Amino acid sequence: MKVSLYIAKRYLFSKSKHNAINIISSIAALGVVASTFALFVVLSVFSGLKEFSLSFTNAYDPDLKVMPTQNKRFNLTENQAQEISDLPGVAVVSRVLQERVLLQFKDKTAPAYFKAVDSNYTKINTVSNQVIYGEWFGENLYQVVIGTRLQRDLSVGIRDYAGLLNIYVPKPGKGQILDINQAFKKASTSVVGVFNLTEELNQNYIIGDITIAKDLLNTRTGEVSAVELKLSSKANEANLVEAITEIIQAPIEVKNRISLNDSLHKMLNTENLAVYLIFTLVIIIALFNVIGSISMAILDKREHVKVLYNLGFTKGKLMNIFFYQGALMSVLGGIIGLILGLILVFLQQQFSLIMFTPNLAYPVKIEVVNILIVLITISLLGALASRIAASRVKKII
Image (cartoon, rainbow, N blue to C red; front, side):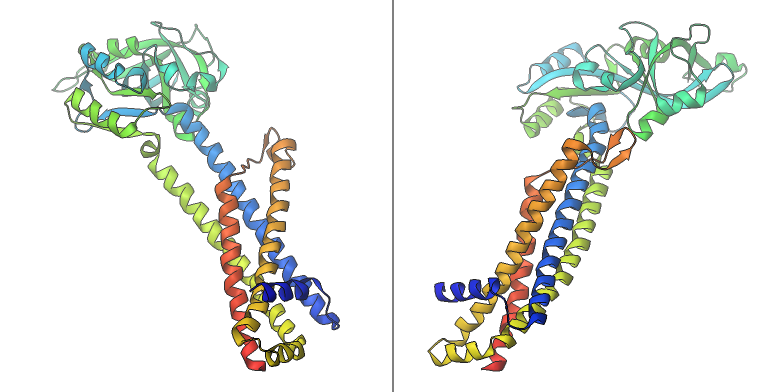
């Protein structure tokens, strides 16, 4: 093995007397470098885009969310809430009431979801930091924050006390509606802030204090639409889900951040896989040049091969020489391409070379898993291509 590897290194780094073979070898090496560089950069871009996309949902979604499976709401007593708070790994518990409502501002109306939260809500996530205009609402006040798209649709101003935002919900009951004014309950609120999260949240949600929803919905004591939890770093999620289910003893489901955005994660993972397969195909095409380069090297060194064979080298050892030559070309080219990719991605992170918008640099992220994926891919495919090319040694002996 050592002799075969030594000869392979000599063949790889020495020039042939035929200039065409040198050109073919250079093209093959550059192809491996370029394809590896492209694969790593694209994977890093998709990692950055994934992190950027999830940053909005992570700012809104809790670590765990308890929701009813049958009705719109379920009952959570003070004792149950305290039991959940005392569970190992639970840092903060927040009650939520949510209802489909009709919003009215002056002569404009729009359907929306009113998410009413308690004072612990801002400890669960960082939604309050996503308020781009105005400020977060005060506790026990008739104030709300509204999504950017909904704010534009209704033409709502910040702290416009001359024009309050009216929230309407249908009154429960049966029978015909004789007076439209008696069919709805109304709460007049002041918009004190505008948040910017995902498109769905921006277009469909307002957030306010839970006291507003209690007055609007006439809920019973302890009735909630959801319970949101923030976990400590050492929390055992599976054990907590089981414990919470036992405490509440109602038809509920407990979801984490991934399951709350299952479709988004599936879409991002599918896109990442598709891009990986496409650029792996580019690497495969580039490795055809390696096969051609090694095949030409075998023809160029056929006299050397015959001499080595006569000196006692087996066919296997002779094949190993050119296998190592191709494998070294692939791996070294891959490492160079990977280093160039790392440099470019690092420069993008530090200096924002390419802008997504005038104020936002194209997101990229260096991940160890991407480095390993690139190295394993180029090593395996390079070894396969080298083995195919090295098998041609048999034809000249």
